Amino acid sequence: NPAHHDLASWSLRFPRITLFTQNVDGLHERAGASDVLRLHGSIWEVGCWHECGAAPHRWRDNTVPLPVLPPPCPHCGGPLRPGVVWFGEVLDADVVDRCLEATRCDVFFTIGTSAMVYPAAGFLGQARGHGAMTVEINPEATPASCSVDAALAERAEVALISIDAALGPHPLALATPRLRMEPLLPGDVDAAHALWTHPEVRRYLWDDRMIPRDTAEGGT
Image 1 (cartoon, one colour):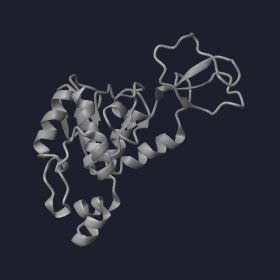
Image 2 (cartoon, rainbow, N blue to C red):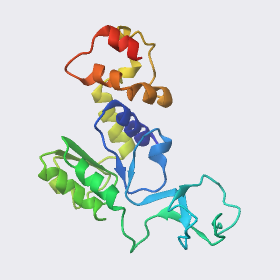
Image 3 (cartoon, rainbow, N blue to C red):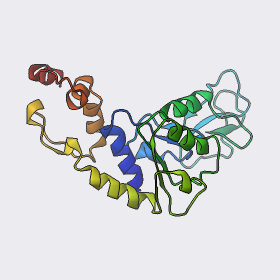
């Protein structure tokens, strides 16, 4: 939905943004977001139920619909399981650590969550403790609503569109004659991401020390 696309656009626009989710549907990636931290895994990944030695821990499988249920492990013939975290299972410690590190931020958004499932529900308090401005976007009040700096009682697709509009035009939607590039529309996610992640372009757009024009042109 539009909220996924707005967040994907922000992941290209702001070089230090970290997007983490409890959802397992992969919609953030489908919208164009990259390097999403998935606390509860992904339904688009599978693994061997018996964790046979021939199979990797997880691998991506886009087969829809699955011809056989449960699908067999191609390595041992046993059943496959979805690459999600079920109740009673332990979260990936590396993912949790990266989420915790991301709470050392300037602004922290919690969007469309009940604020009752831990450890994710605790990240807001961590960010607030580090001095971040905290914003909740959720149609209904949650246990976190009274502790954030701003609580927006709206659906994510409504609130994020308003915030995105207030931020102004996406820089890649504008002509950039200094770099001699044609304008790129934000919807052109693949082209935008390839350009946005180029190290010289990132330095040129965000670094206080502007790089020389000939270096910028040569780097693109």
